[in-house]
Length: 265
Ligand SMILES: [Zn+2]
Image (tube, rainbow, N blue to C red; front, side):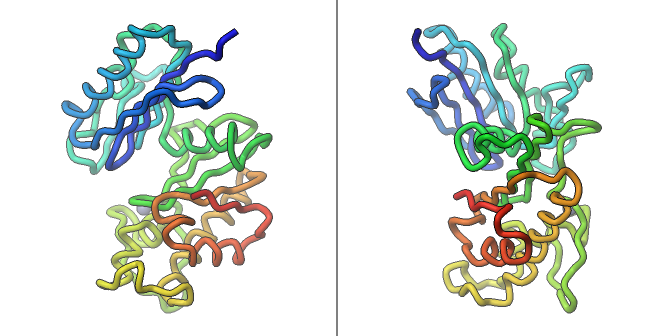
């Protein structure tokens, strides 16, 4: 029996990716498009989905999007982006615009929960029921699975905005519009850039003081995760994660128990 075909759509802050693959992970087609405004971006993604659904027998569809999202199936706003500072995207009907024409089993979740699910299926979270994926990029996000399922409740996990104690003497300005001392405000890519004061990432060594506050904030986040849901492993990734800024993940793993943490490029 041939492997079932699946369609996946990822909406990121700067680019979106539509993928036709099968359940073994083999990718047949993939298209990237920049994330501009919903009236431009969503029809492009829907066009790929429509084409694949017309040509193939698709078994299921998955959409992982930047948030914040309404993930309550009983809500009138289910499948939409809620209030966001990203221009034009508040109220964008992501699920309906991309998947609404097709009566297929469809999963809709945050981009970080999608990444966490992928790690649990193929990567560093394989075989685990409790797992966290921390991404440090334009923002700081946490994909969080407890007892094999992504956390729900009032909304999805927003632990990137958990407030953390600053290091003594740390006066770096927070880039978060809402909090002076949250992880995203102190450790995201724009926060690191602000702390570098015009220096490039390439010119900053692993022992540079700029990493003190970044590693401290991410370590506090990991500590809070361990103290609350107790993930069996935490993966650190994202565009400013293990691949581009090796100093802070190393320091973070030193600050907490190393065996809990893996670096995900
Ligand atoms: Zn914040």
